[in-house]
Amino acid sequence: MNNDKLVSARILVIDDDINMMDVLSVVLRRYGHFVKTYTEPLSAIEELRKNNYDILIVNYLMTPVNGDKIVETVREFNKEIYIILMSIHKDLAPSIEVMQKLDIQAYYEKSNRFDNLIMLIQGGIKYIEQINKIKNMNSKLEHYLVDFAKILLQTVGAKDHYTEEHSRRVTMFADIFSKYLKLSSRQISDLQIAAAFHDIGKIGIPDNILLKTTRLTDDEYQVIKTHPTIAANIFSVSDIYKDIYPIMYYHHERYDGKGYPTGIKGKQIPLLARILSICDCFDAIVSKRTYKEGASIEFALSEIEKNTGTQFDPELAPKFIEMVNNNIDYIEKIFKEF
Ligand SMILES: [Fe+2]
Ligand SMILES: [Fe+2]
Figure 1 (cartoon, rainbow, N blue to C red):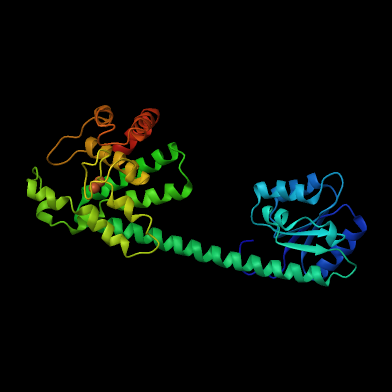
Figure 2: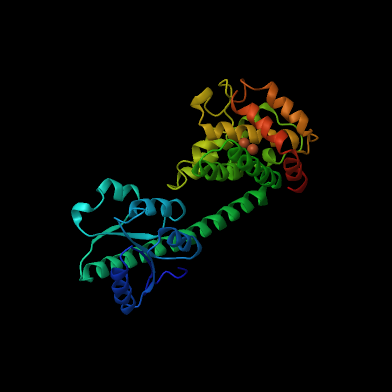
């Protein structure tokens, strides 16, 4: 389904009772639905793989394969289709647990009257319409968020071009490293956002310090060190980013507790902040600044190795080094192009 308004549904029926299916398809077509019927489960599953259907109506007790086994296979590749399970008698129906486990939305007890089934189908169509509306809203919202993020990054770049480029590279390293670590998709996306904005707090640092082309004095360095707190404050006003701002807030903490702003140590530092810290320092060592030449990737990796267990997490740092060595062409390309 491409549009969010569904007037009729595409329905696939699997039942080994040919007579029942003939009657059923006549009734459903009369209501304007597109119907395809199968007596043989394998061909039905093949059809479901190839073409898009809204509703699957499947008989529970069949030979050689029962309806719940068919649903189990269908759910492996299609989580969205609305499923109505049929049975001759409610005593023969599967348990609620089985229905929930297989995400079967409705149960129909077979009879000569199809009113109940038609109502279940109408309910299914309404359900699908709601799901489509939510999906559309979510994709619009995601689009707005991505646009907003781009604007915010440009804002940082307008003040400090280095921070913008650095943040882009750190985001790419965080992305490839989090995938290398096989983190969950939620962790990967949280880390992406945190990496993109980890230095946004620099927006609150006076230009004479932030853009200074010579080395900073101790006092100036103290001011720079407030940027994780400023970043966390900026993002803490938003509810959707509540899991993100701790990653930014702790990105300069060290594993041995000698970092800032709080001095927490070891596993007290959130995992994603420990990952971000390695990606951040790696880029800071390799990239060129007005007051220092850029170092080689090899040198940056030797620095990370040297500071493993003190500055960096002893389990994550070796994996980062391994990840860079395994993807050296891609990493070099990032430094050349961004
Ligand atoms: Fe930073
Ligand atoms: Fe940074």
